[in-house]
Amino acid sequence: MHVRRIGLFGGTFDPPHFGHVAALEAAAATGLFDLIEVTVAGDPYVKSAENDVRSADVRLAMAKAAFDDLDLVQVSDLEIVRTGPSYTIDTVRELLKGADDVDLIVDGGPCRVGVESTIVDLTGEVPAILRAGAIGPTALADALGTAVVTRTGNGSVRAPGMLAAHYAPRARLVLSSAATLDEDVAALSAAGERVAKLALPVDPSSAARTLYASLRALDAEGNAAIVVALPPDEEPYAAIRDRLIRAAAPRS
Image (cartoon, rainbow, N blue to C red):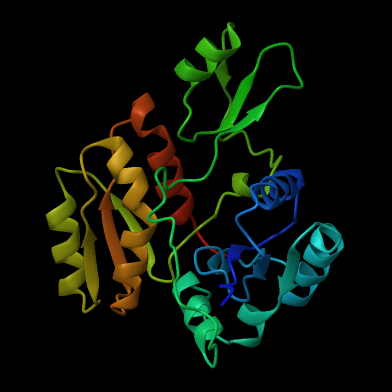
């Protein structure tokens, strides 16, 4: 019996872009899949707190316009029809309901990086990092053979990932320091709030890789606030600091 090989490619798609198209085309070209199902998030968990995400119907229409003509690709509204926050595992379970031709699910495993990409501006004379990511200015300068500057926090939004509030848990995120972390947790608890302490690994790569999974887990416990020590203001921690500051920003 032929075993269908289905690939899942999920996201907010606000908006779809050439990177999404390139990834889908590359996946189709591998010959590993019979179908690649693009699942548009109904309630994108870490973005919904921003209040700046377009409606699910609009994002679905954009995804169909961008991807429907690609080989092997089918755009799905599964996560939109299903209410509540969108998690990949819930989508997999939904696909398995009533399916008698699925024998095996192959999961690529946890993300090796965790935080989103570095945003780089190449329109000027000097390459500029607009949002920190896994690839820092030192590595980028080595690859380009030229100096690279960092321009963050100047108020100019050139891409969705540069919004002041971005990728936030539903709980309020409180920024602290290593010296005052326990004291801040105790103060919030004494005030009657259900509060959790987010303890990130010291290694920056490990901290980046586990950041969002850790926030989700603490959110799922029903905490009103999550307190975290902001890591050092050093290049290896730049992306983690950036995501924590945006997650703690006031919400409209």
